[in-house]
Image 1: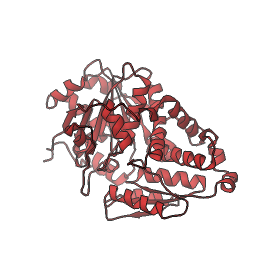
Image 2: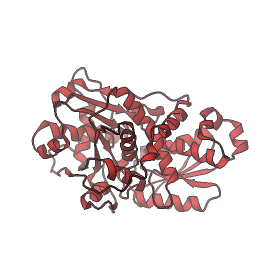
Image 3: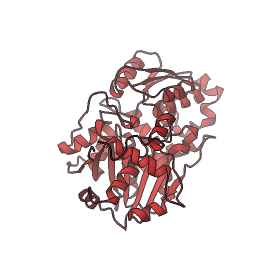
Length: 401
């Protein structure tokens, strides 16, 4: 069985220049924007009381994003807010004026016109961008990497976007989207990864993700001692880490960042230990499609290197285990339909607590009967057939070689 790999964060700090992106007042702007949508509601925080007792924890709560805007994933929060901020900037307006009512009105078409939003995605981010563009009367072009699910492709196409599955990996799809946007009149790339010279829109996307973090913070009702958050390029992880570092500066939660082992660029950077990000290449084929990203978001990386406690590289069986445990919880606990990229936290937490194979990591993280743990299930069954094969059919069992 493939082993979980981990490292504590020993990287040098650098003055924390990007932490302000996730300041509470910035997140409040994003949340006010999302609350203007008729589709908005606070997604559930599932309190797994019996599971916490079984595993030997004080609390274990799961933010369930399968209910977000009817899109089965959290990603729409970032893309929609970035689009609103882009339109506001072009019009010389404050983002506070960019309510759902205004953005979907004929007045917007008269005053702004139409842009084409380009993006690369494994499915969830692209669907969110396509959905928002459709609602706002804008255009969307979406490129998906090799091996993408047909169901996720169809969900994007249903929103009216121009969508393709390319014969390259995610990071090459990002480059393709950026090049096409640059060559298109009124074209703009809306991507949740950042690089030198492309940082403003990714920062807005991260602020959009802050809505989820702020909701979870309120629902949890007290400062969590530990947060487990998954990462692809690191924009979500950086957003969650940044929000809680700003929210609890004197006693921040201990954050554990988890990646798919085949695409563990953040872990590789942490192992190197010098603060410089690392990249991972190849096809990046993993069941955790939403985490199959080999090049870090420079903003997210910067926040994580300054604040995150541990980086963990997880084989696919960890996510599969988490999916099954959340789908079939202990009696009286709520079930959570969590997809491949959403359940890795549950699989890791359970693996750490159920035996002594990873006792060293458990003790290093400080997980015990006093721990109050928050994790984020960022998607539901966005690929229903794959979900059934894993949860019902037992694919990626923890005993497989």
